[in-house]
Picture 1 (cartoon, rainbow, N blue to C red):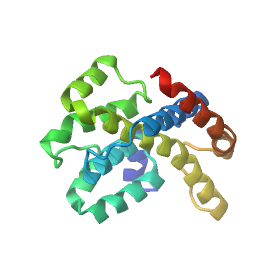
Picture 2 (cartoon, one colour):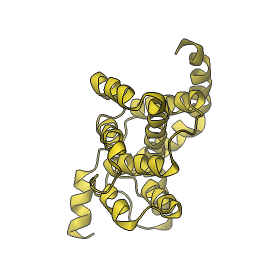
Picture 3 (cartoon, rainbow, N blue to C red):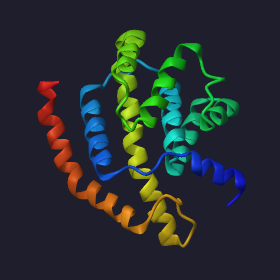
Picture 4 (cartoon, one colour):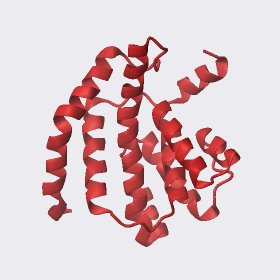
Length: 193
């Protein structure tokens, strides 16, 4: 592994804990059930996805969302910047949402309330869709990191240094057995939101 890769690995978040995974799964499912509008552009969603993935360090999600961003016509320099944590080449009207997305990921889905209020104020009608996109990629990162490592482990390739076989199997168990329960809980909670 190169020195650059080692620095990148050090900068990345620790792996998601069991309670983090359950909470992230619940928030993602709840947001998706509630928010079905298509008010923000595909490019904007991909920039949100890349900003969160950069913080969490999920190679599987990075690969997928880079591919999606390229298909949408996003230029290479913007993608490279987002994957390095820079917001230099993004549209001005999206900067606050992308900063919030990074904050959300850094805080493991527990952003400061003032920043949530500011996001709601700044993006009014699009606020819920932005939050749903962020929560969805957080859930994707929760799964992508261990699933990617497990896939690499089975192939005899190098795995994410943060992961272990026990962690990877625990996440598979959580996803397979608890996701239906979390989904049902998020449906029943909808009227109370």
